[in-house]
Length: 246
Image: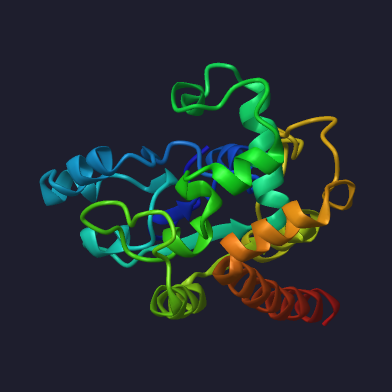
């Protein structure tokens, strides 16, 4: 199968927001397109940016944990795609994901099998607890912004960049987002959407309110960004339905 791309596609994979399965779907629908995978490491991303222009331009798919902005290192205009997740649910899912995978890097930084979710959010300093979605929709800085440093100006930039992204979804409406890709992009969806899911974890409402309030405090900018993403998706979904019906 030849790739369906008419221009490079950049997928900003938000941690614990369904990106593993969606990356597979993207590749299934663009077989043959050269892929650059990003793992979230600044050094790896900078190495790609430092390659000769013709090498950077050879990739049809730029997928993975990357900041918005890699289109500036391509000669041709690129399309963007991302999926965001309710910030409270995302942090809780991340905690249980770490708890499940004993080789996770946080086990080298104080996380143990006895670390509770309360410990994690009240005492942890991992940036994935701190408005990570807002961070990733900002251009990559020279070095990582410290824990607690995300501010209103970064949210403003993230909201501006959100409007430039061609296809946005939210985890809470993933079925509809995949249907939008079927209808608007002509994609075939063969992968069941549950890869890398943390099974059998408690739901949001099962946790103590003090824990939930702390997560909200840490992710107050992501909460605004997620709501803006929901509204953008709703507009695109409504347009998709109107086109199908009419």
